[in-house]
Image (cartoon, rainbow, N blue to C red):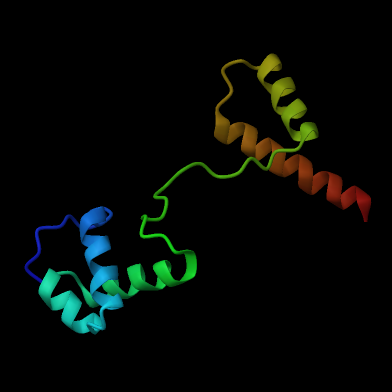
Length: 108
């Protein structure tokens, strides 16, 4: 498109605001993308987000996953760490998987 933007990084807020302003004044998305040298997909995404949320802010990139370990699982992890302080996380994971499969077999 010829713009000086970095792939994978959020578009600057002043450009986002300009996109929304141009669309509000009746300019078509394809014209906006050509004038601002931003892809049509980017313009559409920003306009859709603005319609849904009323915000021009970019979405969150990355971040942490929600915690899913139950207190029982956390207790087992602590137990494994006490018994073997040098245990690797992948070893703990494998043991937890084996334990959960073993306990589900017993429940049947």
